Structure formats: C-alpha cells, structure tokens
Amino acid sequence: MRRAIAVGAGLLMVGAAITGCGGRQDKPAADTGGEVTCEVTGDTRIAIATGNATGVYFSLGNAYAEQISSATDGKVKATAAETGASVQNIQQLVGGAYQVAFSLADTASDAVEGEGGFDGEKQPIQAISRLYPNYTQVVVRSDAGIRSIADMRGKRVSTGSPGSGTEVIANRLIESAGLNPQSDVAAQRLDLTKTVDGMKDGSIDAMFWSGGLPTPGITDLFTTRRDAVTFLDITPQLAKMQEISPVYEEGVIPAATYGAAADAKTIVVPNLLLVRDDIDANLACVLTKTLFDRKSQLEQAVGAAKGIKVETARDTGPVPLNRGAEKALGELAPSQ
Image 1 (cartoon, rainbow, N blue to C red):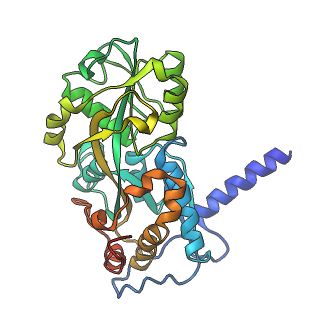
Image 2: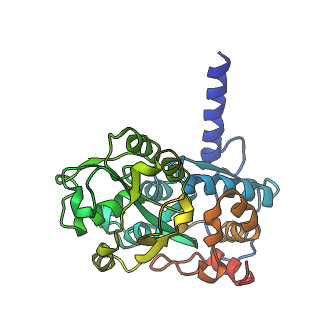
C-alpha cells in the first residue's frame, strides 16, 4: 500500500511538473515580443526532455534542472525526464509535453528544415545554446569479425532507441557503407541500458551510441568487458556523412576516457538545447544564464559539461538562436 501511494504521488509530481495546478503558471507564457529583461514573473514549471537513463543527456538534464530551481529561488521549478532522445524530444517539445529539450544538431537541423523523420513539416523550434560535442561511439565485440561498418551485414546491431539521435546517425552510417539498415543488419532498436546488457551477454554483436564523454553506460561496458569489446573506426564514412549534413566532423575518443588500449577515431556532432519558438524570451534568457552561471556545478555532476562554451554557444545554425538566449549570451564573459 505504501509503495502504491508513493508511486501515485510520484506520478502526480511528474504531472504537476508538466501541467501545473492550483492557479500556478504551469507552463511558460508565450513571448510578447517586448524588451527582454531576464526576469520571470510568477511561479513557472518546466519539464526538460533528456535521454536514456545511463546517458549524458539524462545526467546533465537532472543537474541542470536542479540548478535552474536553485538559481531562481524556486520561482522556476524544473524537472528532467528520461526519454528516447533527439527525435522524440523535438516532437514532444513541439507538442507541449516539455519546455526544454536536448538534441543532436543534425536531428535539430532536420526538424527546422522538415527533413528526415519530420516528413516535410518544419518544426517551430529555436536553440538557447550549443552544448558539448557528441561522440559517435561504435563498439563491437572482439569475436564478431567486424572491422568496418560494411562487416555488419547479417550481424545483430543495436541502433539505439526508436526516435533517438543515435538511431538517426546509426542508420545514416549503415547506409553510407552500402547496407540497408532494415534488411542487411539484424537491427535491435534498444536503449543504452539494454544495449550494454546485450553486448555483455553476447546477444548483440555491435552497437551505436551518440553521447558525451564519458557516457556512464559505455564506462560500465569497458569496465566489465574490456577484453571482449573494442571501438570501431567509422571515419571512412565521414565524407558521405558530410554530404548529408555539414555538422559532422572528425573527432577522437581518448584512450583514457574508458581505459581503452588506444585512442579511437570517430565522427562527432554538436548538441543543442532547444525550446519552442514562442517561449517567453525572458524565461529563455534565465535558462541560458543559468546554464553558464552554474556551469561549474554542472561540470561537477557531468564531465561533458566542460565542453559547453560561451564562444561557441551561438553556433546553432540552421536552428535559430532564441532572442532571450542572445540577450543572455551578450551579457556573459567569454571565459564562462
């Protein structure tokens, strides 16, 4: 009975975070187009769409939510929720279930242009900041005989959660190697936790993951199965990936990140923090300032937050930067 009551109370709290109650301003007011003061009037509740529970989005989103509530003395009460990540986040952000969302830049670019999984419908989103880069972490079992993405033909491959940015990148990489992700590989559309479990027990031969460094789930995999798994160099696909989107760049996963035998070359893509294009600009300003004013606290919670920089925060194109975020960034010192 106590457990049932506790679960019920938890659901009510989550619902309150999204729908509000009792005369509170449950969702951010729409932007009026007036002067941006960076002041929020009235209690406001926001929900943040993150990603898989063992990924960086989830850890950073929870730390960010805590800092938003603290920085505003509770005037803006933020909660973070586990989600399937980028594509789902944008869909539910636009639908009003969330007010802030993490996303990969390539997925966000598809959204504003109505491409990819958005079926020709341009999505009304803006960015409040560019974040840290996401590293495409392709891990294979050492005994699976996979030396390139082309070798994944007929293999059991986790392409990430349905509707996630990981799935978008995984499918594009598989296609760039001349394979059909629906028929040439035995695709397992699993979240990170189930993917790691499958890599451990041998039911999955290879996995894709797009996340910051280090990602807790990947740390777990290399800690427990270090001799049984290895990173795959996917940079031979970079040129074809850049034909799809210029946001893709070459990067390196340092060996020390996961205690691997050597550095691993890979493809990276920036992350963005998104809002609807009609959000109150004053709230967007507060959210952006908090991201940088409380950056040291975020770094303590998540190492990847060190990659969030004022110098690159405006680099969100083709996703427009929210005018409230522009105001906040203009008032911040470059060293933050």
